[in-house]
Structures are given as C-alpha cells and as structure tokens.
Image 1 (cartoon, rainbow, N blue to C red):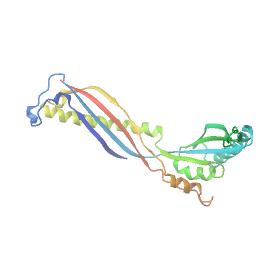
Image 2 (tube, rainbow, N blue to C red):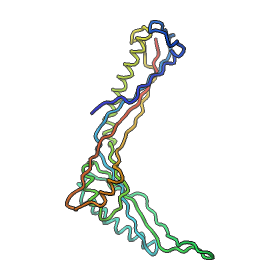
Image 3 (tube, helix red, strand yellow):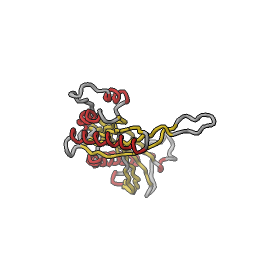
Image 4 (cartoon, rainbow, N blue to C red):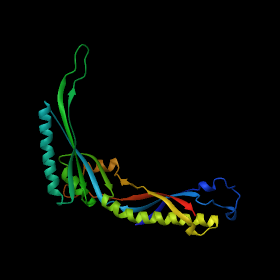
Length: 245
C-alpha cells in the first residue's frame, strides 16, 4: 500500500503577530500558548467489494397486472443470480418499488385517461469478491436493466486501514510539533498534546457509462465480462491542539 500526504495545514495562533522578517531565534511563546496543527494522510488500497444496481420494469393493463409481470421476472432474475454466484459471496437486497399509472395526453375539453400501469423494483447486489462482477452481470443480463456498478473499499478493509492511518497522522502531527518547538527554541517535550480529533473519508471507483452500455450488450454468454475493480484512497484527517509548557 502506498502512503500519500494529501494536505498538510498548520495554524499557529500564537505566532500571528510575529513580523515576517523575524528569525527563529526571535520567536517566543507564552506559557500555555496553544498551537493548532492538522494533517490528512491516505493510503491507496485495492477495492475489495463491488455493488451492482439492477432493476426490473414491466407494464400491464392494471396495477395488479404490472406488478405481477414485474415480480415474475424479478423472481426469475434473483434465482439466476443466486445460482450463478458462490454461496456467501453475494448479498441480494430488494430496493425501491413503485407502481404508477401512465396517462394519455390531455385534449381540449377532455380529461386524461389511464392507458396502462408501470411497475418497477430495484435490486442491489453486493459482491464480497469484486472479480465476480462479470459473472453477476452475465447472470442478470437476461432479466434486469443495469442502473450502475460501483467498486469500493469494504467497511472491514477501511477499519483495518484506519489503525495504520491513525499512526501515520500521529507521526506527522508529532513531526510538526517538533518543528514548532525548535522554532521557539524549546525541547520537543515542551509541546504537549491538549486536544486530538480524527475524521475519515473513503473514495470509490465508478465505471463510466460507456463501459456499462458495452457490458449490457455483452457478447457471448460463455465469455464472462471482466472488469478491473481499481483502487481507492482511504484517507484520514486529524487535528491537534498543542500547549507549550
């Protein structure tokens, strides 16, 4: 894993009034002066999870007919996905469901009429092995519409990396505190941590629309579509308030 420093910001409230031309030897700090330091560190890690968003849409003369037609295809598609994917490697979840009327165009002197009904339901497939994305798409291709595909860092992987990121952030804040101490002519031990806070952010990789369109029209069923899950930056921001003793 590669460690990258994204942003290194330092706010020195106690030094705000020091002239720009002052040398390090001219700097002094009052006892208990507070210094705020911040940093953001990141590690680039492989995406270990994929999320495929699918949908089934069907129409019918009545709301009941539309729902029945949609559910029939949905159940067939879910069955195909479960058969194609290894047990324990995929989580299938039903999403938003709607059944709405389709109206005729309004004509002068006449009210609109219901022509038919549309029923649609979304399904989200979370793959614990992103290399299975191609197999999932192949299995779903006959039954579902494709709404999106996202590769991401799983929650477990993010938590595993968080400990390392916290160590990176602490080391960087400590190095900055040592620089401040040197500027004031005091030992590093004279700068003490008073407050410390962490935040975090995880990026995701989304294949572009042209790729999804090509996947949807995929070629021979015998050849599973292959896609690279890519990498994401798992980042952690940290800030600390130090006091000069």
